[in-house]
Image 1: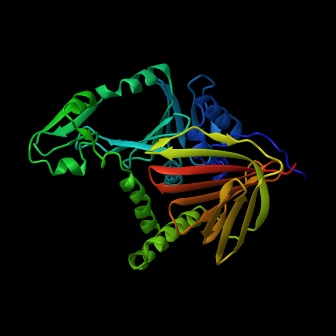
Image 2: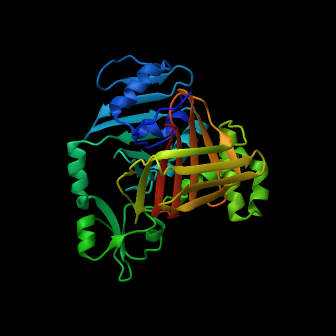
Image 3: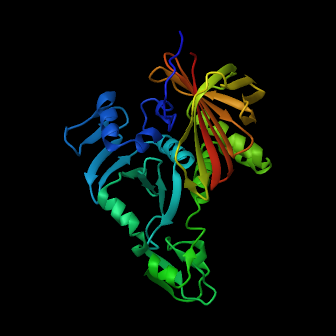
Length: 369
């Protein structure tokens, strides 16, 4: 069957990754779309058909509640570590990390992310809960006046940073008084935002820790492996936990519609669409074996060739007529996903990152005229 050629802006493949489980696409969508998906899935009980409903999973008792604060908020209470782990993994790989926050030594550290659609996601590791705050006029006003937000400083002559996290390692070294102030006052005193407070490496490390708990026999082996091998092993463990089979993957295809999004200094740019050119498509070749990996090559006369080697391909869960394929690369700055749709366009998603703050994401719509 010939596939349709269409102008499509693609933000995420994750809506077809995990079957009926909560996905990053749910967290990135509007609250109205999220509610509609939950209502139409047939997998949830709900006692309210109102603007602010609640849902409870029929099989796993997962609980989802919508309520109003400065804007609309959804809280999701998970019942299994594996599902919670998988959605945190998706958040870390798709959303922008903002900062860690806590105001008391007895409370948990809260991790704050923001999706491309402007939804703010918060979670901590004290409970299996995620909250999603949706944009509103009041929230936008608060964001524009965020300089009045509370932060902490060390009143030492050598101190130079303000902290959103009272448990920050930077404050642990403070031998003077720790004071609470706001961002505006801290900036006036020439304090700058703490790099530790805006780093999510600990959050990502928690997933590796969970892998070790799931695979305790691998811990000794992991200590002797190189960094690329560790990265590959973590990916393998995650996809094995999700039950994805390892497969061979071979495609010789073309893309006419391409979307590019740059990230510079931690700031995501707007999507830029390359105008389709029938006479100059992007030629894409993917060749691999099940056990030895393979290579992705993309050629276009107006751009430099893209060549990425990968070590494994996993096949995700089939849903809504599509099957995702997840590629494992030795270079952790590269990400490759392919969505094979039976009755519509396929999609190829590539992220090429220089570091955590700079890179480029490219979405290819695979189509035939």
